[in-house]
Image 1 (cartoon, rainbow, N blue to C red):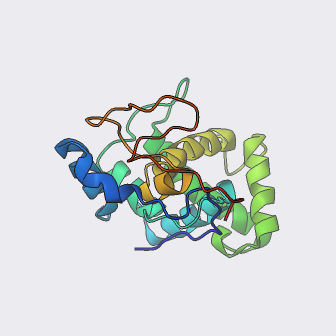
Image 2 (cartoon, rainbow, N blue to C red):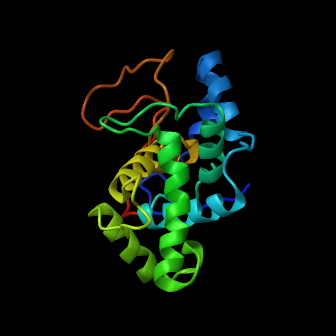
Image 3 (tube, helix red, strand yellow):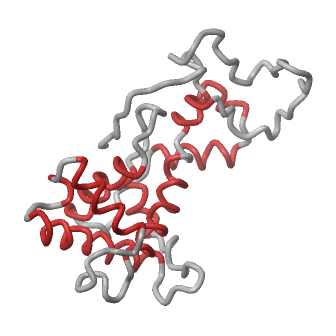
Length: 205
């Protein structure tokens, strides 16, 4: 599985939310286990995935550290399982259609401007293209059906869900996972239940 690496900064350098997994209910344990062992989908091509991985690193230059979930694998599985068959508000295309066509348009625009695939551009060139999409200023001959800002907003929304579904990221931000069935008992200032992450006394590590 391809992992996405970023320099990590955290208040919780020794916390591992998965050490608490036996305290979760059976359904939660099953959901997290399936999430961590995702199977490849069959919709996104290798080219789609390369573009997607490059886009994700531009959109989320995260300080959260190494992700244990493969963004491209999880998104491909979600598309394969028809989880993105709904329409964004006011859109004529499904999320699946927007993302797949958008990834193809991203490659076309990159080649149009720089004669290279998006994944091979330097960071400044990639960010320049992204900024144009956010302002709906993508190349009109390429983004004539699905507009660039619609792709940008749809992709960003879906990637956020994947990134913050990663238990490793939970550990990094100090999220202790589902409270059920344990419950919270410590409510006072600077009080923590024994299963919660404890902030490190020093500066960010």
